[in-house]
Structure formats: C-alpha cells, structure tokens
Image (cartoon, rainbow, N blue to C red; front, side, top):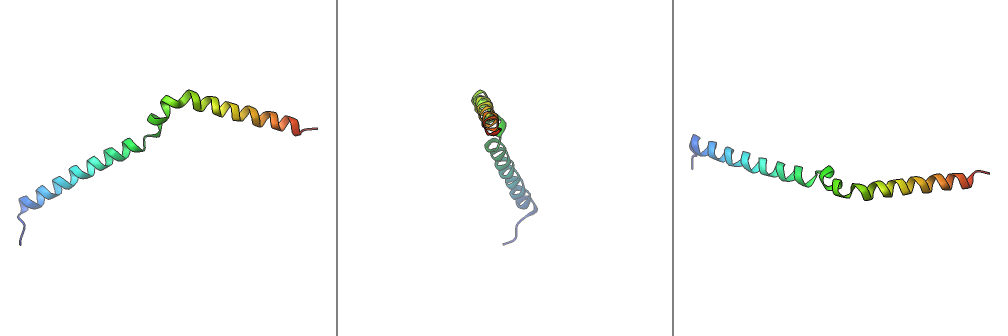
Length: 63
C-alpha cells in the first residue's frame, strides 16, 4: 500500500510531537536543581558537618 505525501507528513508531525513530549519529560525527570532546591538547607548542613568532622579528624592525627 502506497502512502500519500499528506499521510507521510502527518506521521512525521505526530512523531515530532511525541519526541517533544519525551524530551520535556526527560528534562523534568533529570532536573536535579529543582529537586535539590527544597532540600538545600539539609544538604548544606550535612556537607558542613562532614567538613567539620574531617577537619577535627585531621587535627587529632597530628602530633
């Protein structure tokens, strides 16, 4: 069965829309900054705590 030029055009347009939707979904799922923003205070406290513990551990090792 032969497809008309209009059918091919419609199929390509549908595929473009599908691809655009997939790209938008992927961007949303991989947006680390948006996911991290509400948790930023906890992350900052955790990082500061680890840094402080490492500093104290270094000082204790020195004679």
